[in-house]
Length: 238
Image 1: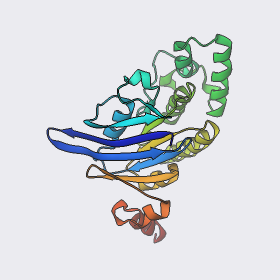
Image 2 (image 1 turned 60 degrees about the vertical axis):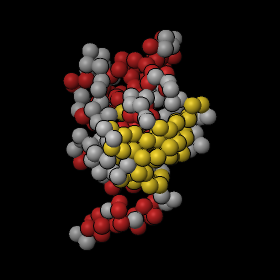
Image 3 (image 1 turned 45 degrees about the vertical axis):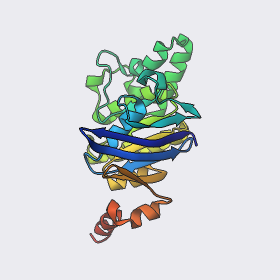
């Protein structure tokens, strides 16, 4: 497996937030992590990113143990609900930022960023500043900035939850497209059942510090604890 998360535990003030969590992720796979607010989803992502330290457990990417590496050494991208763009840089420069830090040749930067902007449907917005963009456009720029450095793993922490319904649907469609085009390996955290099913190649459910992994989406839907069957029944009966 490309990503191996083994026996991760985290507790605060003697209370377990995450308890003995293990999860393997294949290369180019998106795994959805569904759970209610406050169940520890973000804590798990922060541990993988190196922002939080686990009390127990290890994380391997492509066979290398990254458990003791600093966040900047892991080369993992963490995408939040907010796009967190650099307000003083335009769209092109926001996306180019990671390549410039790596001192990539200017011609190559121009080629890569221009292609990324085209993929994200931002060709008419490349010179705009973040305050001139809509919420969905900002998230597209955030995706572009993440993808351009070709990270081994992307962590998505409810990235579309602040968007309106129509824009959220557009971003979900865009994610599926770029995940295929750019061979993304990702963990997608959400509390929305429909989004979890749409985004994930595989499904998991986090509850009471324990992560349940499903063999298929149908198994996930049939499990009463996820609430998926009730939600599907509700929409079918309208």
